[in-house]
Length: 276
Image 1: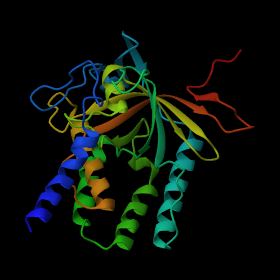
Image 2: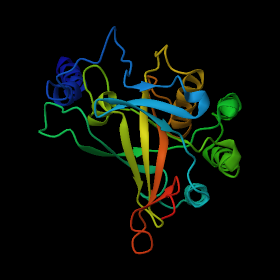
Image 3: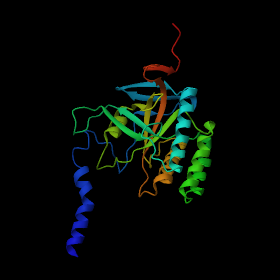
Image 4: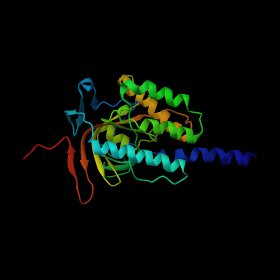
């Protein structure tokens, strides 16, 4: 019995030994009293539709934009198809709007000569600030339903484009802790610029200011705190309960490019380019 207990304890500690070493950090300590606060994003102008960010060492002001109508229609159509595939027992596709390929740069980790990083992130939509309470209540009240019923709940949301704030895309920072910092986390904390590419036809690219919000971040906007709650709840809605609340990755959209091979090849569609 002692052998099995010892083996069990060793296995429990194995992930920390293998994946939480000295290499998974940078030269900067971003933590204080067990939490982090991103200091490279300023949301004091959020109410005017603008955001300030310290990118490449310089504070700049950006206007938040909604993507073009075609992006919104594609996004919702593919999400509804994703739900239908799950309900019919089909394997969901790996591409589409749920699987954003996020590129960042800014702060090297000890395990690499480069800061440039690319990671696939589960990417979701953000209900409008005034709709967040309704969205949270809806997921809470149906949390214990069977999966087909949950799919219908999500479908009802995706059928209403006006429910969402299309200036934002959301994700969660699932793996960063004080003992293990991801490349994405370090880069966004230092240099809050991120591009998101969605592998599909059409192929869209979002250029964004990225804000990462700790669950105990007192400086976050009220809407961001509620959005953190909603995105964690939506994650558990599909995958079951987790032992902790994850930080929110919030991507504020500044530019949209259409990278569809052949027809567009990487032209900016929002904001519109000035006429020549």
